[in-house]
Length: 446
Ligand code: PLZ
Image 1 (cartoon, rainbow, N blue to C red):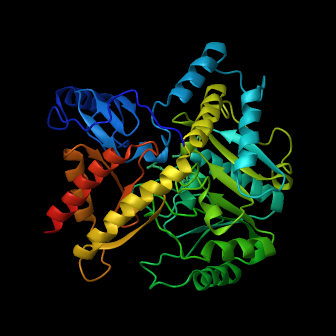
Image 2 (cartoon, rainbow, N blue to C red; image 1 turned 180 degrees about the vertical axis):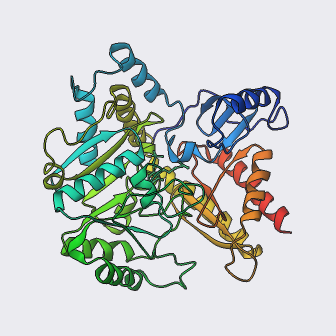
């Protein structure tokens, strides 16, 4: 593990109340030019970002516990990533891999074959966004199996395009009034220990499998798609045994098991991929976010027989596997190895979970503390039960932001604070952010 050096000071600085005057000016321009349907968590506008810090246009420096939704795991301006982008951009920014192919795409595919679970023969395709990767994983599964149905789960998030909206569980804000949705998507119950009475993984899986068999019929199912730890749905960690039982059933029934690791992948949970934690080997993995140090790139990697079943020309897209994004991905993967960010993710988890568990002893509104590695969550409830408390959650996040700590909320019930810090964040800065968060929780629940 090498030491990490930062380009900008790793300090929280509050020069103005947030948002400051320059951010307020930008907010006015934004309102007149940007569609209202696009939201932003922070009211401030970014001027610079590095390591665990985002500097805004008024010179305030926020501690970043969001990493652009689990994207900038190596930081928002890692020197290796910057150098790779510059070098590639000076040679060519685009030729289209479907027109005049290049080595970077192949190198990324080689890396993905090596990094993803399983030592079977694999193939990859590169795209631009997580949703696009998910769409293509489903296309491959349907073509290869000749079957129509796709199984997704309660609390799932898979994207905002038409098919991925159908796969996503939560209506508001993702789906409401955006239908009709793609057909042949079936939703099954998820293992959610805090809300299913602590049902064990095997029996939760049996329940889902029975429903699949009775309501769809195994021979109609092309794929099961699942996030090994659900992201937007609430950082839900299924009970041990749930994922392996689903994967085993899929294998026995000719169903393609797709792990959506768009949020969990690339060292976020302390392993290259979260499904490795239980030794699950997916047939296809979808990846994006942390793959390329902030550049838009996504991928599917899976069994060669499945991916090679598709006719030539059946998969692609103008920008998929853009050469600058591929160069950034190779540099980001190199940086993850260099700094052993898997170990850092585990360390972040130890630090935060220890503090959260101690706090939960004193704060009955903390219903559950959960997560793995640097994918961490606090679920807030009305004391004494499991009734979600979204208002408290929003108030805590707002208090943190006022104090210069950027967190995200999530969950079907909007009652989860999640932490996704850049994995390169320093321990002192992390602890300072946790001080702010724990104080906010204490104050707002006193
Ligand atoms: N699959 C598991 O987490 C993206 C979306 C935020 P895209 N999650 C953040 C928002 O409100 O849009 C995500 C994910 C999982 C797929 C996706 C989709 O990835 O790159 O946003 O398309």
